Amino acid sequence: MFRREFPSALAFRFDGVSRRSLHMAFVFAPIDAVWVADGEVVQVKRLSPWTGTGLASADLIIEFPAGGAAGVTAGDELRLVAGTDNL
Image (cartoon, rainbow, N blue to C red; front, side, top):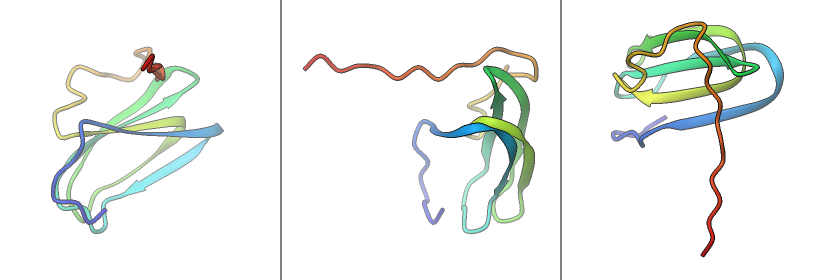
């Protein structure tokens, strides 16, 4: 919220699958939101600035700049894998 520029993606992990809602209050640009439950995409939705809302069951939500989730559809497999830094 309150950002004028959006990073490449934001990921939010939760401890279990449950109904998760998003709102776009104080968000200035549209985003693509992806709800994932147990590695399977449940919902993909474009949320508009200020008025967009979304709700679906998930244990992972990923937010992309608008268009960033192009080609992702419900039923796709999606897993968030943390990288390691060997420095």
